[in-house]
Amino acid sequence: MRALRLQRWKNEPELVEVPDPEPGPGQVVIRVGGAGACHSDLHLMHDFEPGQLPWDPPFTLGHENAGWIHAVGPGVHHLEVGTPVAVYGAWGCGRCPRCLAGVETYCENPTEAPVPGGGGGLGVDGGMAELMLVPDARLLVPLPDGLDPRDAAALTDAGLTPYHAIRRSWPKLPPDATAVVIGIGGLGHLAVQILKVTTAARVVAVDTRDEALELAEECGADLAVRSGHNAASQIRRATRGRGADVVIDCVGVDATLALAASVVRTLGDLTIVGIGGGTLRLGFFTIPYEVSVQTTYWGSRGELAEVLELGARGLLRATTTTFSLDEALEAYRALRQGAITGRAVVVP
Ligand code: NAD
Ligand code: ZN
Ligand code: ZN
Image (tube, rainbow, N blue to C red; front, side, top):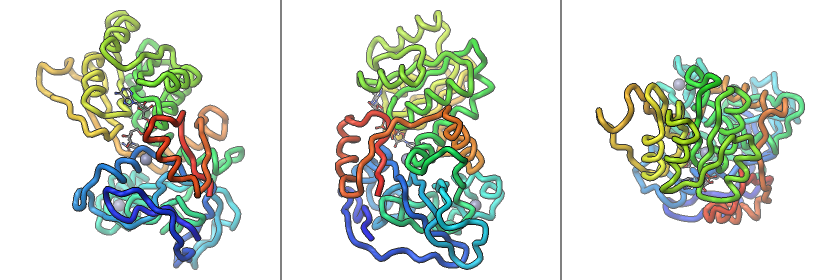
């Protein structure tokens, strides 16, 4: 079969021929129905050096996947060939308390996972291929009725990541609260929708691009603000001087972190989701009192089931542009140039 593989750090991936995967005991092979092109893949191609992550290329890209059961290994009895499934992408050891709770992102025995802190498309072969090997049936969530793998793929990361970040801040989002989402790309446009369907907070979207701001409004944002000098004062005015109760930064560069810190309000949450490499200076006088600052990584298996439920009920829908496997490199090029509205999904 063909697969889009990252062969070396600091390189573009290559579309190459590889052997079809075969499922071993407890394993499953899926026929990929959709593999999302995440901005993190651009960081993998361009930003990381050897030794910076606990794993190295070569591996097949694509960590945002859904498809149909293609073949099951010995001992897998509950999944029938042809069943549509989403892949939970953070692969832990499966046995530690965190993994048992479904929070495999923060596995306590990372050396017993397929690779430490990774998963399919992140150190192990992912979904930018016709078939994908999933090392344990527990990592598959059958799709609820009404959700197609092509639509579900983006929900497994671009949906799950902001869902987890927002869910942990629910107590700070009563109806008179304001949430700010910075960066309305793959993650951000779903973050806006998740805020609208799971809270009654007012939602402010920030981006540098017209198309992204338009998409934010289509997704239900109450206010769309262009990133730049006036963004903070616009947000302050819109909140009658109070500022934002929750800021979700889906970019994570110095400028967006500074904006987040300047608009977050006392007792608020400032959550860094984007891995843009920026830093936030933190000290007693740099941030309002009792603001909690956190990074978040992806989400849990249980939260993935919740996100898929929102998708199946039509409450959460990724805006996607589809590409064939042959066009996958083109998808990443467009993403890099800021020419994708919503999510690019490769349909092998
Ligand atoms: P994307 O390219 O689809 O979207 C990024 C958006 O940010 C674009 O709309 C772009 O116009 C906008 N933007 C860029 N600079 C900006 C600025 N200065 N001010 C306002 N907006 C700006 O990317 P994505 O796939 O949604 O990923 C977003 C970030 O989240 C990336 O850094 C990615 O690596 C990271 N990510 C993190 C996790 C996690 O678990 N923490 C998971 C997935 C992705
Ligand atoms: Zn991702
Ligand atoms: Zn574990």
